[in-house]
Figure: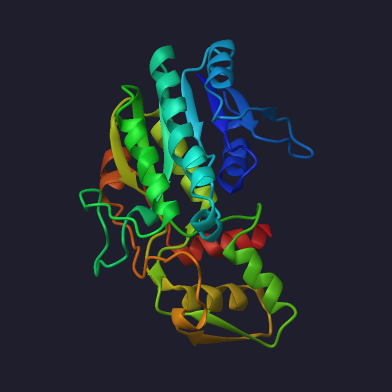
Length: 289
């Protein structure tokens, strides 16, 4: 296949680069800017003409969209930028995929839900985002579904990796220089290794079945940010006390889902996936770090 990757310099994009680079597929890795040490073609996915030229030149069979506006708090102040990258750009990619007869795998988020559930959320749950970021990502999903292209939408949550900025790297950095940290315990979810998500995307890409559908993928199990931080400190061998606190002690511009554990039953059944326990994947990431 001729595969076009967007957002190739991000957490997920870098993991996909490692997975796909040594395979039989003809891969084109793109981003809005270059990344030192790796080959990346510059592509603004909000530019319809640029996307069309790239898709046609590459004779694209599959687009994997990892690009997103992920600054949740900043999105509250700059809704236009969030909507451009999270809603309009996926629509452009999807329409160009449809035009070229290509398929699209698009990554979305648990933030499309309000966080009021009390059991794992499956794909039939009604989205009701409570932040600009969540609304922009839901609009992106809708644009993909209405485009007419062959697609899969993957919602994920709490992503981390050895690349870029993320919770695991932040906690390790802080714990290395402080004697104690306060971390919220009233937000519950499932930490997701970008490597595991990349493997799931690879399985979807190779499958002939299960398309034109939305799936949930995150690490197995459920923890609070406090539990997650405690495990990071422990597995990193750092001498730092982690204290539990309430979200109200750390007011933010954007509201976070209090509960965002995703039900992975459908993606497991459809693609025969085994989802690793979140702590097992965290251990592997820390070894890489």
